[in-house]
Length: 138
Image 1 (cartoon, helix red, strand yellow):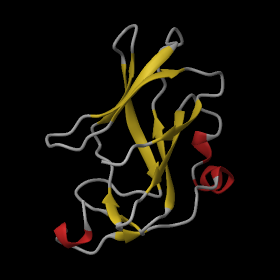
Image 2 (tube, one colour; image 1 turned 30 degrees about the vertical axis):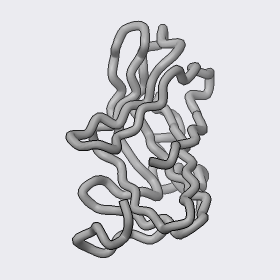
Image 3 (cartoon, helix red, strand yellow; image 1 turned 90 degrees about the vertical axis):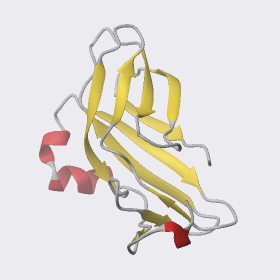
Image 4 (cartoon, helix red, strand yellow; image 1 turned 180 degrees about the vertical axis):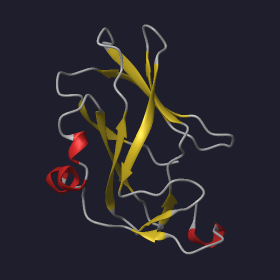
């Protein structure tokens, strides 16, 4: 989505997420069983607008269990937009509920009622439940 397509001013890009700072503000995230997904995105020759929908989930490929999105950092929830400047490496953090302990592989799915939702398949589970995902440009 380009800047001339929005109804209100977007939120401007901020620096990368500092987990230490996040844990100070939300200490419950430090000792929990949440799943942390760091999303990385590079804008192209134009500035772009991005956002995340509340209907973004982690889905266990084995059991189809869904993990709900519980917190975001450095991105806005739909219907608001975040402006990513031209040729900019942008990162944001998504925090989800835990998946079943038996989960070995899961998918990240932005389930939205319009074109443009993303799907990242076949994410292998690790012991820390911290992931770094590169999001494709539309």
